[in-house]
Image (spheres, rainbow, N blue to C red):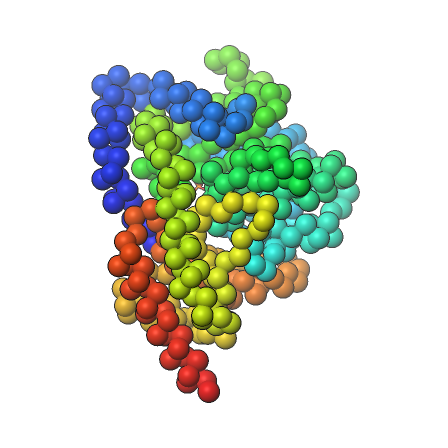
Length: 374
Ligand SMILES: *Cc1c(COP(=O)(O)O)cnc(C)c1O
């Protein structure tokens, strides 16, 4: 699905120099690269606090821990999503409340969110799924009206820009009270292991998050809060420092792949519905996820596999229908999307030849399927 090796070859010298310098200095834990990377990422995002941590799931957990929530407090999250958010909400004794998503943008639907608000609701947690921002302005307005926190899960959209109706532009992850991200290798800004970070503009939250990520201490061996041990490895920070200057270029390359697919599949409507772009957000295409209409997804997938074309279903079961998280809700759009989405390979290193091969094979499969139907 991604070509990490091809990308590595282009920055090999920078990466190896960074790794060598960490090993030479033996500052493996909280070395200077961790601080430098946090500072550089803060500049890139224009955010006051970047608190590095061990992975994107920890980032979400620490963000929630910083909000003084009580057991049973409710966190509204999208059901069509990766499991991490629901998982940490549950682990903290909070109650995940699932809202539905937009049928074409795949992100949280503000109307559905509004219907889920109760007097126990404390947080709305939008996810910028597949690389495009959730409708933050509407969600922030709802949060303001009901006095709620907003935590953005930005694991999939680092580098995306959100435009408010007054023209203000902010980077994804810096819009709500707290933002989180993951540096998992396949993410748009991925390291070579695990990593994550938490963002906030708020100094009170920022200091608290820093302390929670470090065993709840500000001064060594003085523990004012119950915290966790969650650090970004210095080696990973050195790799991220080498990659950060390339992030915009990586996101542009992903957009070029997405534009190619859009164009190639235009004539395959309604069998294939390509992902739609919201006017308030740029898209960084962590995934190129399309909808299959009246096409058997398993058959499509095995056909692609037979041609050596990888594909993935993100995500096949909505969270509210997972055994560990089951509720009796009816979230029609999440259920619909889980039944018919499919994601194609997208990365910074795709050749025209590969793209043509994928598009040609998909076109012939669809034309065969549609002619059989006639
Ligand atoms: C990857 C991802 C996470 C978790 O990141 P890890 O670093 O793997 O813990 C959380 N949320 C979303 C939406 C993700 O895509």
